Image 1 (spheres, one colour):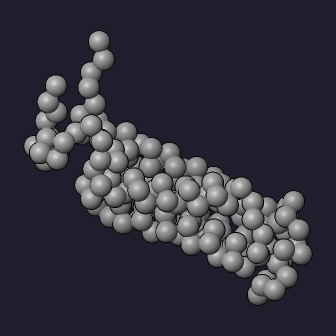
Image 2 (image 1 turned 90 degrees about the vertical axis):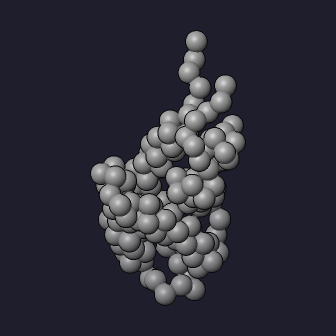
Length: 156
């Protein structure tokens, strides 16, 4: 017999999912930063930077690693430690990721399916924060009615 998911279990699942997404974001940003800084973009042609303020992938790689990856890392650490400002940092990380992808597409005028994945990552982080804040509780517990969500009980 399975036990029904309660709002607290749903919140735990949402928190752990958010933590997993943040860790994925950190690793991805670090890999991208290494490719940008050490390998000058790796397989990405430098010609994509034509018309941008950059001659190489050094500065974009540093921004990706330190700013975007850094906010993902800080958010993950704070969420893991259940710090009071953790969800604020998760919002910063989510918006940072989405803004990075938006600016990347706008500047290089090239599209890769990876940009959709990372834009989706940022959006998913933001959605999970909304759910954890109780602003959109149905995102983590769609089967729980509002009255039951507030009282913390689930009727069978």
